[in-house]
Image (tube, rainbow, N blue to C red; front, side, top):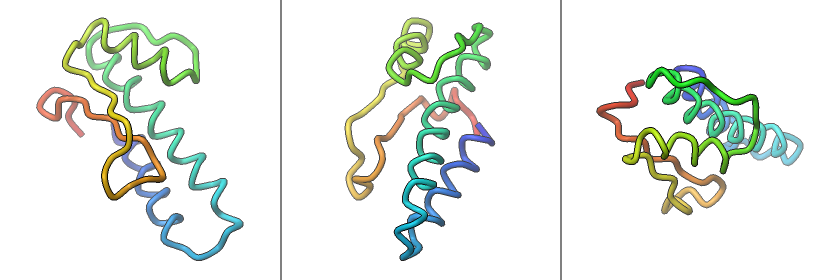
Length: 93
């Protein structure tokens, strides 16, 4: 989760800048965060991770072993990224 959080923080910092040239880097870090979060939870649960960048596939794999996992649409106030909502008591930091 630490690496996912680092990507999230990088995206927030870059998103706050006024430079349009950094928008693709913001998207990259958001995607990396979104990919690392379910992978970290799968590892935490002792599951093997499929080599994929498919966020839907990862979310389904995680939901199969952890029904509390949810992937919500768009988080209010953050229209530039979808939000992930693993149970914080299980997911850790």
